[in-house]
Length: 219
Image (cartoon, rainbow, N blue to C red; front, side, top):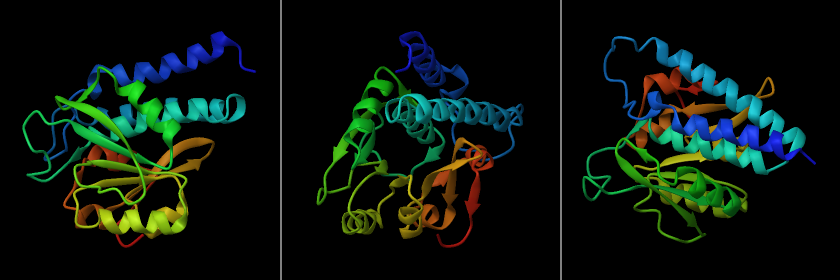
């Protein structure tokens, strides 16, 4: 069992990541910005911290801290994405992150985003069940579901401005946009640009620079 002090220390780092002021309003990259060259370096530090945390999670507290790391990633991804006009009903509409097949992650994400915002929008977390409409979601994490359920959800997401995230190579090959991967004992992520473009979503160049691999063609 991990000592309480050790668990608290790791969790504090995750929460510190959520509070870093330079993440607050990054916005998608449209043109070179003075000082923007430092952003990929900061992404690198984030990846290092999350990678170390996830390694600790796997070795010491399977599941719990890994969920905290993934929750931090999901929250931060949303700040580096631009959705097309009409994706939000009102200027103050919340950004909604759906989680399917991972209730424990959804609960962790709710805890992590409480009191936080993305580009001035409150963040809501919704547990998504098979067969439910995906309209109104902005991010969808696909967890442990049967293959047919995953296929149905990915099919339902097509035509929507919905960022889909997975942590399975199989699901990534089926058409998710972002996929968590383990590389050199660190949690990284791949990005597939084709489904991103088809959904009329824009991902910041800063985030793409931080990706482990970027696919320009089909997954």
